Length: 124
Length: 107
Image (cartoon, rainbow over all chains, first blue to last red; front, top):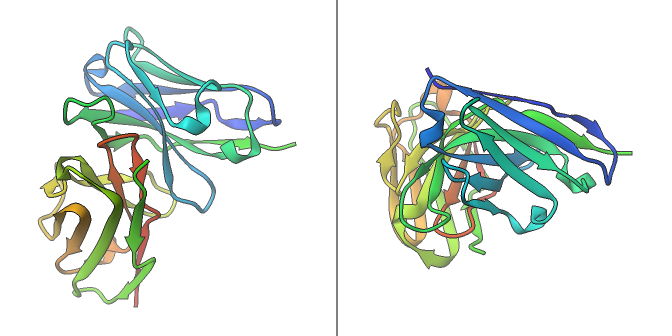
């Protein structure tokens, strides 16, 4: 059975950094695109980033470009999101999600399985 | 960026009734790149539909998706108690975006 478990969330001051991680099990991690999607308290979903199975391609929403990086370790079945220069508006539950490539374009990936999320709070 | 507008914001229905949820895009895109998700309070989203009309694994056939161009619809033929939740549409044709959600609540 597929499982995604996020960790690393917490309280951080504006301008600070935080690294959230996702441990995958129950499927062949190295064969799948992976995504981070966030949800601010009481709000809707916002896609944050995608990474190709081999890590060679990475895509980000404009609001986090230059501040967030996504990486994966296929040997350890793990996914990470490094968040720098955090802003109050980055406060959200961050979900790790498995991606399915469905088309030839760079963004043609939907999310077929999600972890339970980890809360990141940016506040002074 | 493609903006997705979902309507209505809230749908109040009784178990057994039919639910029709709308998702309208700011510009046309291929129906291959439209998905629907269900989210219950305190839970992660669950994929229902991808490619506008293909049901994900394990999704009951009372859920169906349709549409093309800029107008897409999620239909729940007969609401079960576990279907009361928030539903999001998503486009993944270019720079993934989600709609604002439709809450289906018990009347």
